Image: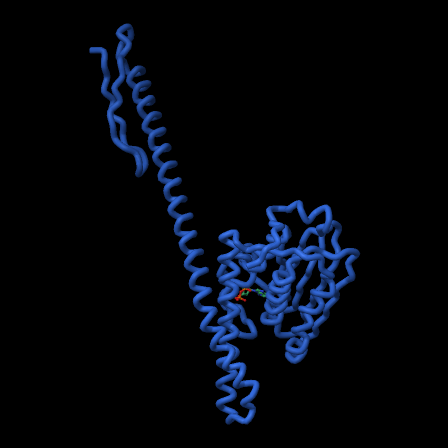
Length: 314
Ligand code: ADP
């Protein structure tokens, strides 16, 4: 006979059993060596088929995941919009009452203040989610303006002075004058500074919160450091993951969703910059944001690291 039928075994989970049909060399004895050779050939072929199938399935899985991701982003973005309108409509009247209703009974005022505080919290969260979904959908458009970053940073940080000092912490803000205006999106920069300083405050029970802005070669660096509870070393690589929170961390409040730092990182990336964290447990943390200096004329039209230089805002 000149044909051999060799069973091909299913290999792995996705392999298919089949039969390999080969024409035999009539001048060669079908001995042990020949048989081995043929079964190796069949093994190779079934392995290649299995690889191909695995690759195909992997690709389909990746496509399915991307599709889910798109749906999720779309969902977040719709929902955040829908949450924001009624929230804004509730905040207005509450603020109105709080402004004019000083003669209300104290416990009513206290309750209204709680409503107000928590509505603001919810609004902040909804806004962060909205920012996030915009970033993910590539629809977050930065508007970069030449800015005295030293003054701006000092002003934003200054908002915290009263609260931090009231909690018996020292607060040092050192914003060194920079040679040139820096191109930043001011709203985004504000979110970056606010998030980092409010975290430093939240996780520090004694000592000092420090904010520093300084030139560093072709970049400008923002450092927000604290003498707070610190971050366990195994958590450090996960700090900028979305919704990641350190278990059992003893913050000033238990509020938090783990979205702040992830958002900060995205905003920094939109500036072509980087953020890193160093921390020692029970000693303190130091977040360093570094963004490249862009000279207005030469660089405004030349995006760096994928940062987009479009100037439209929604
Ligand atoms: P949130 O504060 O809403 O939980 P973040 O993304 O801002 O979200 O922070 C995530 C987690 O990182 C916090 O829950 C906290 O455990 C930890 N963290 C952030 N900043 C500090 C800090 N300065 N010191 C210690 N832990 C911090």
